[in-house]
Length: 256
Image (cartoon, rainbow, N blue to C red):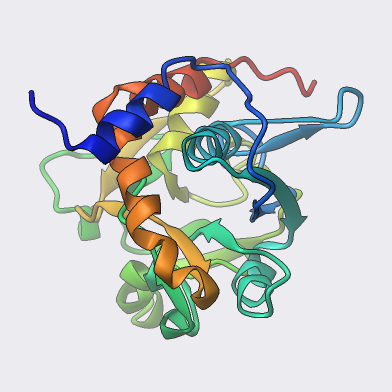
């Protein structure tokens, strides 16, 4: 396969998966949810090291762009404003989640997943999804937007149960605090691999949407987007991105 010079150069920088290089002095401040948890982002108070999908991707992008990366743990509903107010440079945010997406500039998608409903009773696969979930309660995160569910929430097909960052969605399901939970398939995959729940958990179905997750940057980074997008493309083409995803999906839960 013939690669452009810039992609070849970036790939050379990405050859060592765990390498951390000295940068040119420029830095990227990445806003992350302080309560996010694995597989996306976690911080160890003892070692003072960050880990997770966001951390590994950001470190590799920083390496290829010859910059330093720092993490700004913050609340979910503050990330957008932190970037706009220049407290942070970027965050993993989809435009559909935001109040003012026009105030930010977005990279190409870094990774994709879906959101799905999960329950402790096996779904009737002969029914359409709306029939499988109609009349049931669903646990959703506070301060999160779920635009694809708006119609069902407004017409009463679903009854929302908003839960705080302290509540583990799959635990809420096990405790019958709600009939369903709605979460992304990366988190579900990691959670179900890491926990031996008493009650079996079933995926009820998805809305069919693919969630494309880019990096959302402050407008000050607009002129750097070609380099950012080239680095993302190289990360994907080299296979390193998939390795990062699989590595973090396989990580064990050591929080308990």
